[in-house]
Image 1 (cartoon, rainbow, N blue to C red):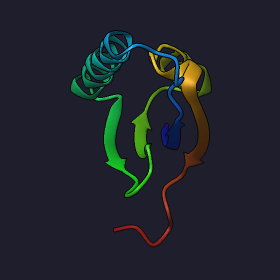
Image 2: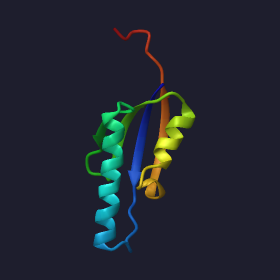
Image 3: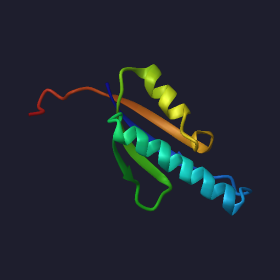
Image 4: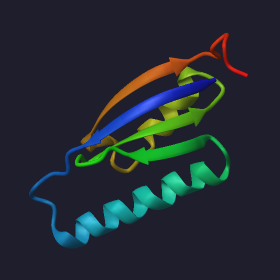
Length: 91
């Protein structure tokens, strides 16, 4: 199943620079592993915001929930998920 996912990030202001760098490095590694295995199909920045739109291709809602919950930044995100279906005019 395909899902459009918007992720808005708000980092805690009390994180040290070292903790922030570690958190972001873990997030990047996790997300790139999912991109390499094909479950995180696309990722785009939202201009002017600490946010992205992504396309996930996973078996079901439970798999997506598990993947999103595994993001190191998950506790600092607001996430909106839209399930997608093929449009009848798509060629």
